[in-house]
Length: 224
Ligand SMILES: [Mg+2]
Image 1 (cartoon, protein in one colour):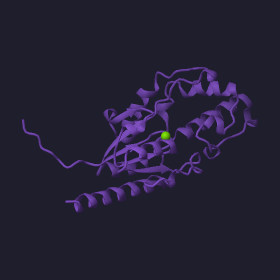
Image 2 (tube, protein in one colour; image 1 turned 30 degrees about the horizontal axis):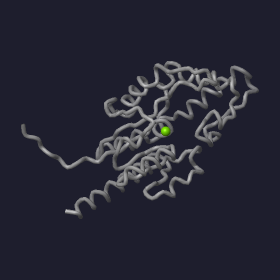
Image 3 (spheres, protein in one colour; image 1 turned 135 degrees about the vertical axis):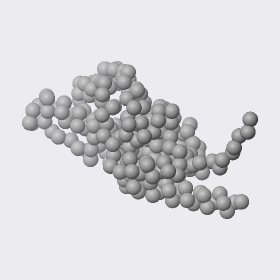
Image 4 (spheres, protein in one colour; image 1 turned 90 degrees about the horizontal axis):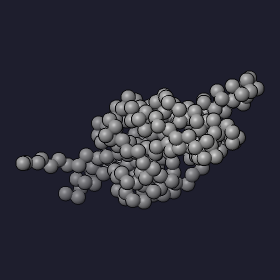
């Protein structure tokens, strides 16, 4: 059998929560609704800008009982399926798809902590796969559900969690890390690491990735 060998196509790794899907906005909305049920018009109203730590529950100083109920609601059917898409994500990913193969690597939501009720979610992974295909046009065979993002290599990773960027760049020396600017990572020093860039929105992230792919292509041809 004859095989045709094509030059390798670049590969990009895409995170979902906090990057393509606005998980934080959805949790903040859910919490505001919950507080309204409890306290009516006297309830405080939070925004995404209040989420200055990676833990939304800690950022909003949630009481233990509220955490348990919020954990249950986040893990209920339909929550993951209805997450909003960040502005410009679809356009940027469509452009990137024309020059690179995109792979989603997304940390699955585990069971809630036992102090928060221990609720598992039988819906999360199935709803995430369907969301990624419906909203981003990426089939589930290109979706990996793992906390260990550095397992998947490529020319770039777009991610909101600084620890994930640092771990990925430590392994993939030809790739760049693009940290999506969010209130919860704004004070991070991850951009001090060489090859890590901060992106202010999806158009900016796309431009950084495209520029890297262009320079990689020139280097590839210069070496020959
Ligand atoms: Mg994320």
